[in-house]
Length: 92
Image 1 (cartoon, helix red, strand yellow):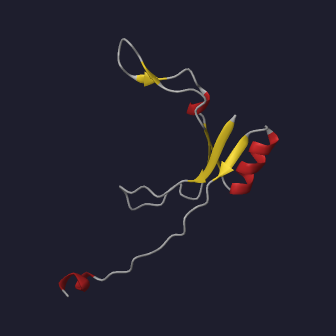
Image 2 (image 1 turned 135 degrees about the vertical axis):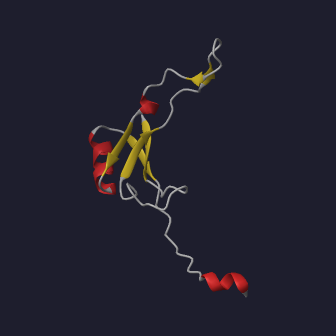
Image 3 (image 1 turned 120 degrees about the horizontal axis):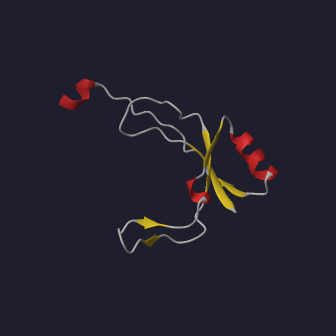
């Protein structure tokens, strides 16, 4: 089993920052998705891809992966940059 550990990004559609401090352990797909012949929906028999675990810290997520023998890659969180802009800058 392989997984990836990352910190949730801020939702681009909302200004709130809820749940952005959580770390997520998400399993990677072990088999390819295929279309259902009757309905046309895509799916697979891989149930591990549906599992998403949340942790308060990156170290807790890594400890869980090590405890259960999960090969996990940690994706670094990009630095947060603020673009300070005044309304008056639109008219210069």
